[in-house]
Image 1: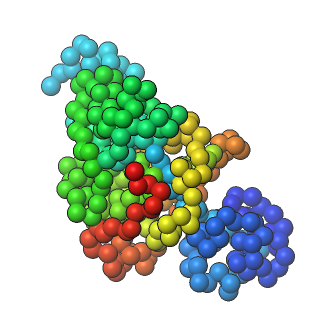
Image 2: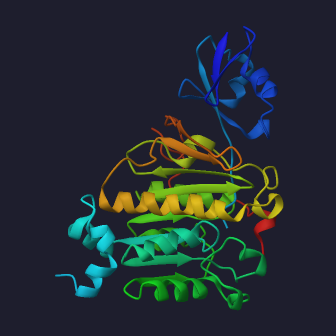
Image 3: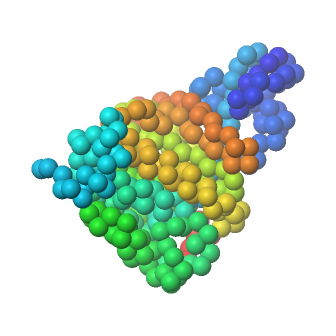
Length: 68
Length: 267
């Protein structure tokens, strides 16, 4: 299936969970990432049971703390 | 009141813009913006706001200027090392534009003082460097119905969003709760390329100016990210979270509160 992950369209295995996608994409600090699927937030507890489908768009939103 | 000749000249490049004009420039002169943190983000933001003639600029910061700040915090110069950042900031901004009133508060914002501090301002700019402060500013602005610009920068990356009451998600919609102290690195631990504050802080000033003038589209409902190494900006749509603890349908947070400070931001 094709997914658009962080704006880039790529081929992924069917039946991939968000948890597995986070691993595959080597997301930094995976336990603190916010994920949106087709412009809706996914609760972090639901990552293992959420399976993006062909054509879906996934965004990773990261804490960024600096400023001074 | 008519503009004096000197004002017409100072702001001529604004006044010539049809989106600003004399009326817009007057709006800016009558506006009040609070900059929290006179550091990497707050420096360029406050400089551009002062140059633009934003009539009253508040600066909140508890710290003194350190030599390691000068690689990016362009409100301060080498002779300022050891001085209070708010005093150094006041001097720089008044020299740039003596017409601007600079109100400084040498303190750290907390649940006890934040509502008083933001009350008199039209727009708040978050230039802080830690998550407890970012959540505090978010919650207070949502509760007091104040628009604000959020930003964070680290290494070669920056991101920002704008919150306007009643128009889209707040910072807590996106991130819910701060990460545990030291779970996510901050600038002092991870480093920051100096010009990143210039890029993102200037964009925060741009958001404030657009909001004050009522022109264009703001970064409400989207997160703008900048990756300097890839030379790439992205605008990521942000949904609101119906069950957000502060701006959701049944909020559980009705007053600002303090999270424990990150150890690394203590002086």
